[in-house]
Structures are given as structure tokens and as C-alpha cells.
Length: 470
Image (cartoon, rainbow, N blue to C red; front, top):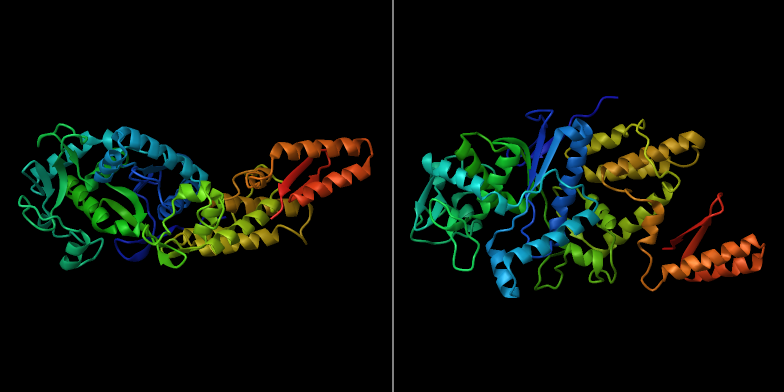
């Protein structure tokens, strides 16, 4: 069975293109990661999930050993400095604690760990090397302890965002400074104030600008030119535009990445997410508190809710969408309850593969997944039905869904007020009653558990499993 060709919408060309890696044995992708000064909000979850699915798809198409995924961690930034000072802790304490929570949240969303998660502070030498190249080639200049990129030195500047000069000036939130030659010039290196992190450089003790960090980390781990660069649509300008300027001018390349992919914005219950509106919600809060919808939500529910909208389209984050995603997962987990392993010989459904390869058409892929779910039942029976379940599960796995056991899925969502130990004791007492053929007592315990919202399933081997009824 032939594998469909992967097509990607390239922000650089504004067209959907056939994906042709520079080296099929070394497919390389870089995605902008978090600035670890605070918990990641739900909008940040979208690129995490989108590019995790793309990573899974690339591994499926080219083989896990032939794909390298880099997602950075920004651990030096003005926001980090301000938040650490506000809390009265060191910058290192802040970034370590925040990154720890971030990693836990990402795992809860079902994302694979990238091959490399470079930290900005570990790549200062590469940043300085790029800046020195830019100065030497006339694309940057030092002034008053700063180093700035000379935007007019690059005629192609603006080709990614396709903005006019006025739009770029507005979007960049230009800092007015006497040492700048041009309004659009942006900082590559700046002096560190007392108490701020700093490193020795040819221009004095200082720290990098935001944009140079990603150019340095992608260069270090993926090379001067690589295949895919991803992130949210809000990063197109100025961040990604400036990355292109730095990398292309430093290395004398026409492109930094051949394909640029960007996911759309997220709003909450029809409104832009903001703290002033009281609808600002983090991934951590969704997973661990009852802030949104009056309850905690499993990470896989968040994931499926994201995947119901095309990644380039805006998404409206609603409680209703989460409830629908959870109900769907309940049904899907019950469908694969009898198959806890995978079958390597089961081929990925061709229609499902084609949908994903068509610029990650998530809505179509999820629709096909629903169809595979319905096919994995009567009138099929025996081996045919089992194989259909495996085919359904294989497709779900490529989306990062149905990764766990059915029993674990329902058990993790047991309401807090239900004591799991008490449930297990009641089940043991019921099994003892059944063994003694005390059917009245057995039925009484089953009814007691049902009143608590617990459904029992007696297995052929004499054991009993349970789940929370929704």
C-alpha cells in the first residue's frame, strides 16, 4: 500500500506544497518553546499538540530514527527577570520550577518528548558567534554596549510576514534609542544591569536579545538550514521574521527553514483570552483545578478538543467542546477495552493517512476515526472485528489518543469524593459473597456501588473491574 505524499501549507510562500526534506534520512523540525517565567496558558497548548502530531506523522513516514525534533526553552528574558524580582527568588529557581511544571503539563497532554530541548542559557557561545558573523558581514553594528541588526542591510526583510513598513513598525513595538541607526533595527545583544544575568562578550557583559536565541539553538542542533520551523501565528512577526534575517545573513543562505508552519489563534467562550476578562486559563489549571467548567479535565480531553479544528483556523475553547471530547473518549476507550496491545502488521487506514498528510487535516482525520470506530463492531465478528479495533486504535495512536489502558482512563476520572480503597473493599466483599453463593449479598453490594456511580464488569477469569459511570 503506497504512502500518501505529505503536503504542508508554507507561510513563506502562502501555498500548500509537497514536503520534500533536505535529507530523507535526517528530517529536521524546530518549534518555538516556552519562556519559563509562568505557567503555559491553554493557547500555548495548541502548538504543543499540533507539532506533536506532525512529529508523530513524520516518524511514521520516515522512521523514528530519521526525524529530529527540537523545541527550545527560553530561560533568559526580561519577563523572567521581572517575575523573579517580584517573587523575591533567583532567576534559576524561577525557571527550574516553571519548567518542571511545563514538562509535567506537556506529558499530561500526551505529547512525545522532543529529541532535544535546548536551553537558551546553554547556547550563549553560539549566539555570540552568530552576532560576530553579522557584524563582520555588515548586517549588524555595535553601539553603546548594544549590538543591533541593521534591517535595511537585508532587502528581503519582511518576506515571511508580508507587511508594509508601517505595519512592521507598529507590530514590532519599536524602541526609540539614540544608538539605533534605523527604527526597525532590533537588538541582538544588550548590557546587563546589576542583578540581571549576564555573560562576558566582545561588547561587554550582557545578555542576548530574544530573537537571536532561536537562531543559535536551531543552528547548533539542526544546522544552517533545516526542513520545518513551527510556532503560533503570533510569532510570524517580529520573532520569526527576525530569526530568518539573522540566520540567512549570518550563514549566507537564502532560507533558514524551507517550510514555515503556524497554528491559528485561540479564544475562550467566544472572547479573546485575557486576565482582565477573567477568562485567562493555564494548562495546569485545566488539569488540576476546577477553574474552567467547575471541574478538572484529563489531558487527553484537552488534546482531542484541540484536534477537532484545523490547526490553521481559529479555535473557540469552550466547556461544551471539552464535554463532547470527553464523551467521545469514553466511547472510544470502551471500544478498545479488550485489546491492550498493538499489532505491528495492522496497516494504517489509507483514508486516515491521506487526511493527515493533507496539511494535517485534523477535522477530516477525526471524522475518519469516528467512522473506524463504528466499523469496529457488528456486523463484523471474530478476527475481523478484532482487526478493525486494532486499525481504529492504530489511527488514534497517530493522533496521540488512546495511549493508556481503558481501566486507567476511567479510574483517573473517579470523583474525589469516592474512596478507591472503599470501592476495592466492597468489590472483594462481593467476590467473597459470590464464592459463597450468597447471591442476595452480592446483589446488594452491586446496588450499593451503582448508587455511588460505579459500574462493575465481571470477567471470565473470576476478577471484577470497575469504572465510573458518566
